[in-house]
Image 1 (cartoon, one colour):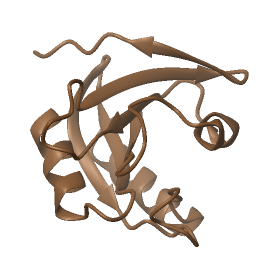
Image 2 (cartoon, one colour):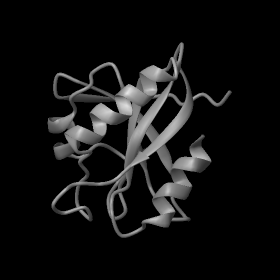
Image 3 (spheres, one colour):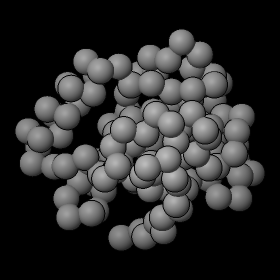
Image 4 (spheres, helix red, strand yellow):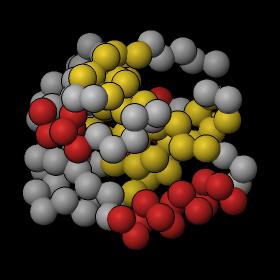
Length: 126
């Protein structure tokens, strides 16, 4: 799954790519890319409300649940920015940040963002 996220970020290296992560029982089994609707996609990401509604219907129709949201930081650090923390609207979802640079030490990191605080999560590959 991490390879799919890296591939998405590397296909669009000049913008923040984004999407949803779905699965069951805490295990992510599906990555769903979404268009970045932000006004400045090189600096931030936004998934349009209509797209979120459509993707959530798709996730539920497949018997899955939303487990995470991902986006890349093409020019930033592998941790949530102030904007990421302020705009986090799904406290039960993990927020994944992807660095598309081939030499990135930790290319994919995950965070819990609740009440304005970010805490790194361990990613377990199964």
